[in-house]
Image 1 (cartoon, rainbow, N blue to C red):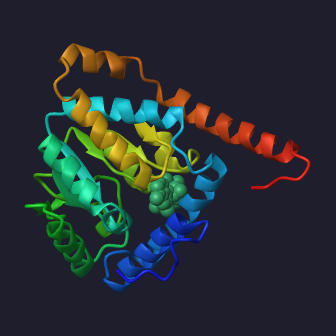
Image 2: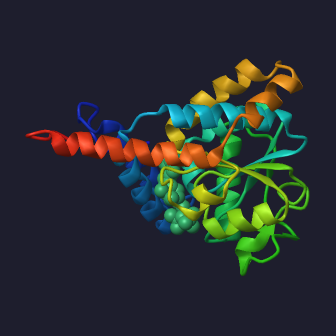
Length: 256
Ligand code: ATP
């Protein structure tokens, strides 16, 4: 991809990911609405301080435990995640022996296929697409899922997801792990595990946690999960933002 931002720019990384997303739109992988969702994420990333904090690390550790213990884990991918972290998605799926399933908010067969083809370039062998499976209680095409994928799954990794679908998947009895920079979103509030951090920082850490914990005993992994409290993690993330803003506001001349 041709970059429009010089590497010397102080906010190069943030602008690089914007370039990636606009490339995603040109390739009909990311939706236009996906750009605004990214903007909402960036706002919260600024508030958090663009770093992986301890509440996110704790949630990542528990996510690794839940994904390793799962009988039928599924990694759901949308247009934003596909363009931002394709290599990492494929690596995580291979490590877990899990399938990746395309699920996009603004459904379209062509875009679903483009996402699948893009991930295949990064080594994915098989990508599931929505078929006749359905999420009860959801209107429109967004209810369609794969019968052998999310419909059968016990644990679903759904980063950057919308709140309605998260709630409906939970009602189906699925365990839901999400990544969401906004700790107040309905998804963040409803998921079993919420990683409040940027997906681009989360994936490498999650991959190394899975590698580290893969051979641990079931009882060890269950102990990690039993000690995990998502509402506490959400509270800690909000308190972190609050403390950070107070510190910034109390400086005489604040350099954000
Ligand atoms: P909800 O429906 O859950 O209340 P929402 O209406 O914001 O939330 P979407 O716009 O569908 O739902 O979800 C996108 C979510 O993903 C937003 O909460 C946004 O903060 C978050 N997000 C966007 N980009 C990233 C990113 N790179 N990493 C992590 N989270 C992100």
